[in-house]
Length: 62
Image (spheres, helix red, strand yellow):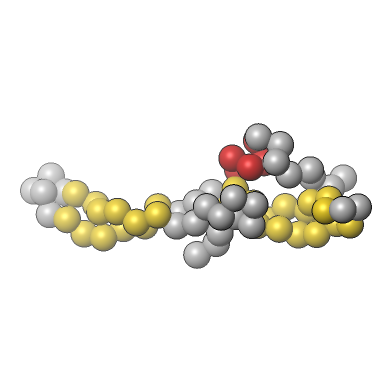
C-alpha cells in the first residue's frame, strides 16, 4: 500500500456489490507515482499522488 508523502493519501476500502447484491470487500488504490522532486535544493525520490502533482504542491526536478 503506497501512500503520498505530501498529503498522506493512501488506500481506501469499500465493497463490491454484484447484481445479486452480494457484498465482497475491495480496495481503492491511490494513484501514487514515484517522482524526482526538488526539496531545499536537493533532489529526492518521493511517492506523490497525482492530485499533488497537478496542483503544483511538488516541484519536479529536471
